[in-house]
Amino acid sequence: MSRAATMLIVEDEPETASLLETYFRAHGYQVFTAASGEEALSMAQAHPIDLIVLDIRLPDIDGFEVFRQLRAHRRTREIPVIFLTEKRERESRLTGLEMGAHDYIPKPFSLQELRARVQNILRRSRAEPAIDGLTGLPGRPLILDYLKEQLGRSDWGALLIGLQGLEAFGERYGFVARDDAIRAVGLLLTGINHESGDAFFLGHLGEGWFILIGSRHQVSAVAPQAIARLKSALPYFYPLQDMEEKPPDLPILRIAAAQAHGTEGPFPDPEAVIRRLLERREALSG
Ligand code: CA
Image (cartoon, rainbow, N blue to C red; front, side):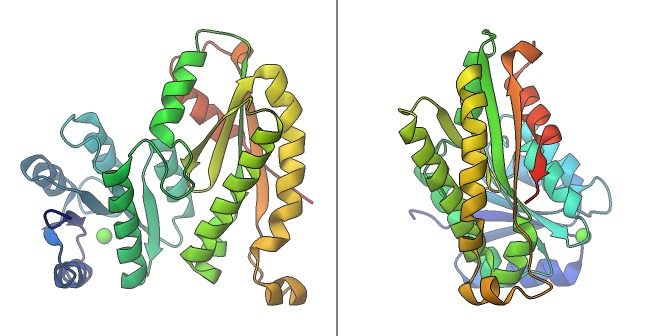
């Protein structure tokens, strides 16, 4: 790193804010703090910020609104954001994913885990922002670009596929195991694409949700195959002991998927396709 990475911590609880500030300063970061949404927005405009840790619950505007406003300004649009969410706010994660947040960490969190995520994101954003650092696949910006090219046609299809239950899985086994599971899904899908003569565009939207884009016919044909393959791989994502003993509180991973086709359009923009897919995805039992 040529200069210290700069982060903005947005948190109104003074104890948490000062803990984070002290911890990241001690690890060589330049740290700004903001105790409200409005303060966060003005600081992000005023300073060059590499990454924002953003609490959802703030006294004025909530973290999602802060995020929306950051995305609306050229200067702050590209800043990676990690949301701090309450455990009970599981649906918060979904909203954040739909908006294109980079990561989430549920409270209470471990400082080490947060720092590892901060480091991962900074590494990714400094290396090649278009490629998802976790899977090596095209990330959200490239997915949106590719989808945009398809929107003028009617014969395209898109399959959204991923793991439901990853959050509880990560809480139980740690985020390294969670990331391993995401990578494994990426590799399986890359293999399937390869067997199809690389007929599909394959990308990772984030949080373990992948998208395959191809002709409508190809996507309809590959969907059951991809679902079956991922389903049969699920047991291998668990530690051996838990898979054998199946404790009653075993976090359950399920494959969920959804399709969208050009004939359902017109879609006003690629984000509308992503929204449709996220709304439509269903966990496939069994
Ligand atoms: Ca708060």
